Length: 369
Image (tube, rainbow, N blue to C red; front, top):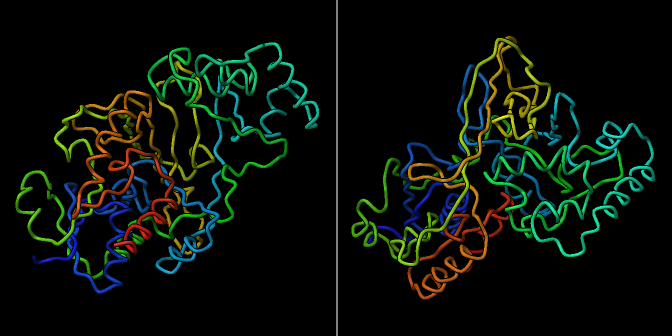
């Protein structure tokens, strides 16, 4: 055996696992079928601007140890995620807070906002929500639902809110303060210069093979390491014997604009069903460090479109409904019987993770071995 560990997938989970194993003196090979490191964290330089190639990624956590770990590798900037939502030409703050309610109802006090929301919940008179629409109406009332939830959610999932299960929305955060910070976590930011710097630091002294598909030469790869960490699709690993797990995915159309400020914010959601894209990302706003130079007359914007996953797409969001949960459990049972294969990450565990949880779980998984 040439290596202690073969790591399939050079995303965040695989990279953190490889880093920890290298610290322990283990010999690792990491492979990825893409032509770049970092998975969906990969960034690209366009016109001197760091572009989040696979959508915006903001690192946020309340775990001091995890924040200390990533900051020991690279420097993070002070970016605070404060997205906006556009509906019929009107712009509202997210998450739902007093700035949102003041714009929507021309009010000022938290008591006025609470009164309106509670009255609309009462009018909806829904005690046992049968679908996502009823669930949302029972939580925030009709105005917030129709303006900021309905169209956006239907674009995300490609179907009516009445046809989506209620459990997709377990709660809807409503703040009765003038606070536009999207996350409640204590720590938040983005690596200065982008995520490539973080991934490259994690993979120092690790052997790397890109443009390399594990399944194209599986017998060879299964025999070059004592153990395998697999971060790809768990159903593919088991040759889809219990059926395929389903995903939603997104695509992007990026444009270079002759301006240094297209929309004034990094993330703008578009909540009308009729607008084909779900949001516009303006990448230069992610970089808050004054030491990073950017052009004065250029900006890069990415229009994001949600769609059903098809072969060749990047699987993004697990559809954790009853059918898929049952299928995943069958694969998980097989995975738990493996002696030399470890599964980790959003595809292998069929679970959407925030980045801090990926780092935490990857470190724990590595230390358990």
